[in-house]
Image (cartoon, rainbow, N blue to C red; front, side, top):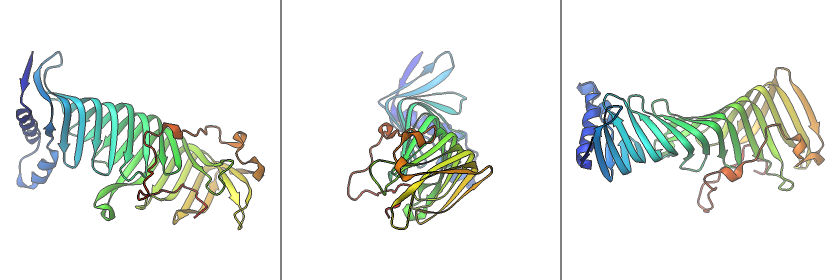
Length: 322
C-alpha cells in the first residue's frame, strides 16, 4: 500500500522523528539541533508498507541537511524503528571542504556514518586530493573518510593506492574552520609514486611500497612525515650538488621512515633487515627497476588537475626543482 504526501509534511515528520530520538533537556539543545535531518527538497513523497514494514520515501532530486552536511540522491527510503536511511542513485555528501559520490548508500542516523558503493569517488574542494574506489564510508563523528576495494588517489603530482585509503581530518582555523587532511593511511598493497620533476624525459618515478604507509600532512597540504612498514621498499632518483643525475637507489627493510621540512625530504632511515642497491643513472626510465606493483594510473583520475592560473598548485612529494 502506498500513500503520497507533500514534501513539507514529510520534512516535518523527519524532524519530529529526530527530536523523538534526542534526550530532552536544555543542555542537549545544541545536540538536538545538530541531530536533525532536514529534507530540503524532493519531487515526490511516498509512504506505505512493504515486506520489511512501514516506510517513508522521498523521490526525485532529494536533498537533505544534517548539521553542516548536505546529502543528495535520487531516492531515500527509511523504515520505522530503523536508524538508517537507504539512499539510491547518484548519492553525494559534502560539507564545503570535501565531497564524496557513489551510486548507492546507507546513512546511519545514530552513528552519523554514510556507507557508499558503486563507483565511489571523492575529493577535497581545494583540489589537494582526489580518490576513487568501489566502496567507501564517511564517519562524521570520527572525522574519517574510508575508500575500499581497489582504492587509488592523486595528491598533486603524486599517486597513492592500496586495498584501503583512510583519510583523517582536522578543522583548520586558517581555512575558516573547514576540514583539512592531517593524516593519510594506505593499507594492504600500499603504494606511493611520485614523478621525478628535475628531468622530464625519460620520465622516472620515485616509489615506495609496503603493507602500510602512513603520511602526516600539514595545514599547507604538504607531507611532513612518511612511514612505510611491512616489506617496505623504496626507489629514488639521486642527484649531485649540481643537480646532475648520479644514480637510482633501491632500499628495503622492515620499516622506512622519512621526515620532511618545508616540503623537502630531510632524513630517511631504513631499519630491520635493511638492504640496498644503486643502479647507474642510465637505468632511468627502465621499467625493469620499478617496484613490482608499480602502475601509473593517472587516466583514472575522475577530476582533471586545475588549469586556472589562480588555482592552487600542489607539488609532488619529492620535487627537487624548488
